[in-house]
Image (cartoon, rainbow over all chains, first blue to last red; front, side, top):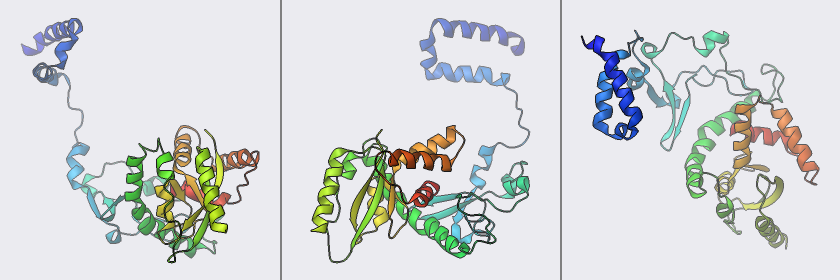
Length: 211
Length: 87
């Protein structure tokens, strides 16, 4: 009976909503529509949805993960395949239990290769690379020390510069003007938007530094 | 958009990488960076490589020739690639 009347009801509702679209902005009406239209959508997923597995996905400290991933330019096993999550509390690896995995093959199964390798363009073969250990140490340092230390300043920078839309304010901050603890370091910077007053400022600074 | 190279002077009393980052620049090395790249440029290249076929060599050649025509010499091309890769 309900199924027979449903097309007419829907046609009526469609007509009303077309004439008076503001009615759809009232929550009671939208809720009632959702209840009426729910039977129209049949359930096609026989397996549980991904949302039911969200609680099964674990974040574990990166030191506790199994080793199966290569770092760039290095052939040895380094890190698990799951993505890294950088937080102020440390680095975590996202582990998806086997029960929550879909039937789609993993990257290793699909490529039949145990490694993720993104070439930098300057290496020919990882196996013969004499700098493999150096690259490994470099990769470890960046992933475990440098990038986590940069997360908080980066978020502060995004907030302070309006999502990088106004970097003039942050660049006017010259920082330490010289102390006995540190030493001077000259850095070449490639700017996307070069502001004249910044150039003048840096020329002045380098002039003071030289004399 | 105006691309250019400037040399800046930093004091190493604080982490140079964090000092550069706080100024909107991404360092090529944590302790003694010789090159830093504007975050906006890295964002732009990242977005470009999402919408077009990624080609780091072509991008670097373009940047190098663009800067060269304006009397800027990009001598640390490898470091630029590294910045792009890490970012």
